[in-house]
Image 1 (tube, helix red, strand yellow):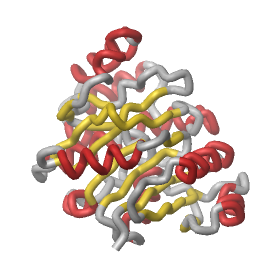
Image 2 (cartoon, rainbow, N blue to C red):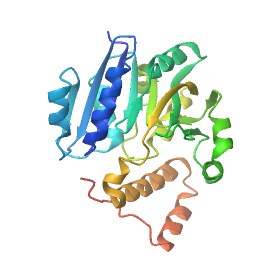
Image 3 (cartoon, one colour):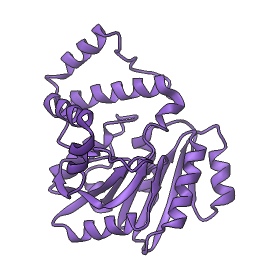
Image 4 (cartoon, helix red, strand yellow):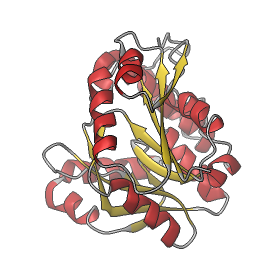
Length: 271
């Protein structure tokens, strides 16, 4: 049985995907692993490139853009490793990135999910963890991000038992993921990581931020492929999250978006 499955979901991000796969080659973990690329009906030759240059990588071609949560779930169901690493195509592993995450999930009390310190290409840290989403928690997160600089550097320099970590790079125990019902597929893109961490925590699993593991996140590159569609997908996921977790707040959020002219269509074409 493999120790680890690395799952990368891709949709028209060929250059980033190739760079991500090269980083896995260059900084491979010291344990038995496989890499699966789930392609969400890309039209940029991503799949052909992976099959030509990385024949050892398993590819799963979907016939439509099923979204981040659903595509990851396909890989979960077609793999059997003890651990699963969800990895965005716009990330780059550094030396020891995965080994340190695996060490942490095995060592930390009750750990079910761990996430690394995400940094930009310039080395600046990303605030990639936080409290369960709510109006107050979202305001706090935005203020911390805007403060930036020294405050974010301080927060991301020490490990912590947190409520969620970013799905850009998230290591989970398979048994904990399956007990939580995998990722909720009502989220096409965004919010699924917070929801997933909440489901795992509900079953008693703990979530940790692990700064000794560092991963470069070229944030926003995937979103840049289709900015308008990405923004609409975020707003639909945001509404879905509040409807599920804060139903008394969801009508107010919907009203606010409507008044701003930002209420997304419910059945948008995500292809």
